Image 1 (cartoon, one colour):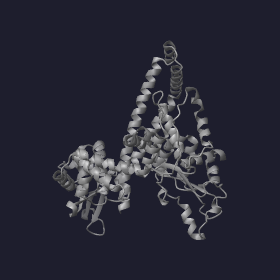
Image 2 (cartoon, rainbow, N blue to C red):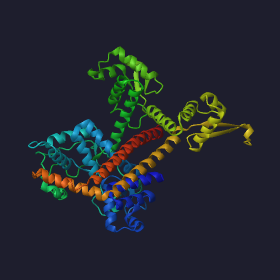
Image 3 (cartoon, one colour):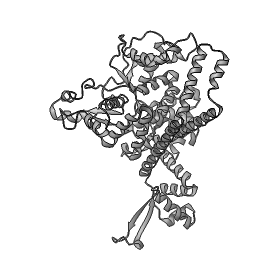
Image 4 (spheres, rainbow, N blue to C red):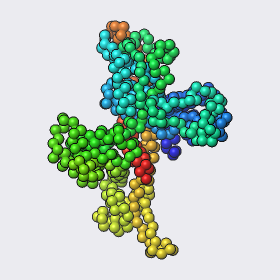
Length: 547
């Protein structure tokens, strides 16, 4: 974990949960696993605030707890996950993907689960049905069964999963460790230190039989202020639905697999054409269930199976499919590989090679944007040739010696290019030593990833600053919008509405428009950088898994 990651995590926690949660979260990130008393002592916060902050972090999966490192009887320790906090950055993308695949209902289900961390199916269905009903035309309502059906589809496609069972979830801090050693002494300690994963129990993707009959309720305008109290009353509702104690959470890894597949499909479409991308899409869809998340390539698929699985709307004949498969196999990007000749040919999607080539293209693009096309030519040449002397770089890149030397030293100073010394004799005399320039793609990708974290942190910090500077104006705008909404519902006169609208002066309106434009630009830049972060993270994780 680097300083840039800790800084970004702190900013994300502050933006979504407040400064107190940020202080506790960043403290755990910097200091590692600690018990409650140590956290209180070192942060200087009250017991109540620390407990509430830990509850928020645990509720959203950003923190886990386990028995102390000293064994049974020692206080429970809390550990914060940097990776899980960084997922907050990708929340808009998760919600948009759910909307694309499952419509407005899927969007609101994912949004509700992301906001609450984890909750029951019945609670989510009721809340989403009420929100959909609120936005429907007068007289129309959303049935609970429709929302339940979409929820079940999300579970079937593994976008949602059950939270792993915690046997000590109801126990107090002091008594929790005493119940841990259910299995004999020594083997139990390592098991408890690692939190259980959702896939570690068989009912991870099993939807319970929930008895939900009814339709969404429309919220009256006068009840807006009581929204929080009604949520609390819903939690204390004595009515049972059959899913008590079964909590659900968003399966981020499944979303990441979908993002990875979409990135590969988009790259194929840009490199070749739309038909090739649809063939690759079909191959990825066929191998979704059979391929493990960390596999370097999909399971082999025969050309006959691919042809039968292609949607009829594509109108691709068998000879044309064979030509496209041959074109994909022969392409230098190596998105598709050939694994055999049976069944008209066995084909696989090279997931790791595809990610490596996409990461390589990203690195080349960064070098070109920062240092120009000639530096990008040298960088691309070193990636292809592996090791070259300065004279060879000048000859192959067709760049004058002085310019090539300056560009190489600039790239070397930015750690984008490395210099390797190969001596002819043991004394490392410069006159008897080869100096070879090379590019190590994996360390360079890691360095660029840290730069991306720094960029996003700067964007988040700027957005928080802009919002804080215009806090009074934003609050005034929100109050006026709330007054206008209530007047419109009550059927007020147009003169009254105009009078309320004029409470914001023309300079204030201009300032608000400028602020919203800046915020939108910052949000858009944040999402674009996150796409680069996801690609580099996927490449690094795939390389680590394959090595």
